[in-house]
Amino acid sequence: MEFSSKLIEDAVREFSRLPGIGQKTALRLVLFLLKTEPSRVDDLANTMTKMRREIRFCVECHNISDGEVCAICANPGRNRQQLCIVESIRDVIAIENTKHYSGRYHVLGGILSPLDGIGPEQLNLTDLADRIRNSGITEIIMAISPTIEGDTTVFYISKLLKDIPVTITTIARGISFGGDLEYADEMTLAKSIAKRLPVENYVNIR
Amino acid sequence: MEFSSKLIEDAVREFSRLPGIGQKTALRLVLFLLKTEPSRVDDLANTMTKMRREIRFCVECHNISDGEVCAICANPGRNRQQLCIVESIRDVIAIENTKHYSGRYHVLGGILSPLDGIGPEQLNLTDLADRIRNSGITEIIMAISPTIEGDTTVFYISKLLKDIPVTITTIARGISFGGDLEYADEMTLAKSIAKRLPVENYVNIR
Image 1: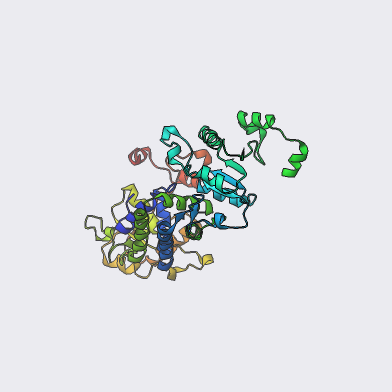
Image 2: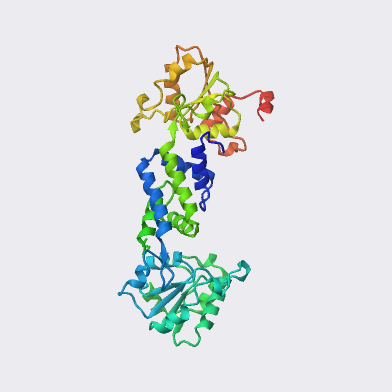
């Protein structure tokens, strides 16, 4: 695309480097910014650079944080006996939004994937065993996606923690609420029959 | 959504003000920026503010411009006898990308829409007649969307220019290349039959 303006061309190029944003969307964003107050554009730019420069990772759980320890780890109201192990920051946000978990987290920063060169050294695992031993945690919840890599990671971590007296659980797998049996994959449907629940439980969950 | 970080929250809020970007996409962009080099994030922010602060509008055609006169108006290689009247900067970019027009433009900055409070005063029309009289233009091409508002605008401008000896044309309307007759609307199909072309012309167009 040609824009007859170097300024626009540069801005479109920068925007189209963002994920999921092609040249057309980038142009739309740029033309929107052109109609916006200059001070509002400055706000967007400043918030972005400030966020990138000042963000830190929590020394306890490796979640993103404004200070040394994140708001979740620092919150005395949270259950200190439960620890939820997740792949990424995004998963923490997803679980927090359910408002049904009150324990703390441990963010791995990835899952084991030898083909992509991601081994145990690339994940935040070195401090995990010590953290669990020294902080009175009694239950580890593995909230990791049910894929081959995810299952490998769950298996690896459960072996890593086998000498520590904690209960290790994984999130339930089955048919989604509102999901359609007809369109569920065979593996999920088979597992959801094998792990069937008494009706009383079902009513409680709902 | 809760992010347990003020920095992230602010960045997501700023991003989700952009058109077509909701909270989930904003979060994806923010998490992408978190993984990017800080200097690259600075580049994006600086390009954005520079663009907004330095962009100008061409004094001749009202297109966006890096200087007083835009690259298209300043280009001596362009046909000075043709003037294409368009609604917006976006239309200039779309027509330029076809590489089939070598004249110059006049950007209205909108189309007449009394219901939205857009009358002739809100458009770049005051200098249009003078511009056409004084610059040897012989043909005006109205490249304006074929909507009620667009047609009103075309009609208004053609009345405005009725005393000036120029040919006024509008872009052809008909079935798109690759389009399907079955799905074309009745109005377009009816017009494309009424304005049918000799086969020789058809071959030339293609």
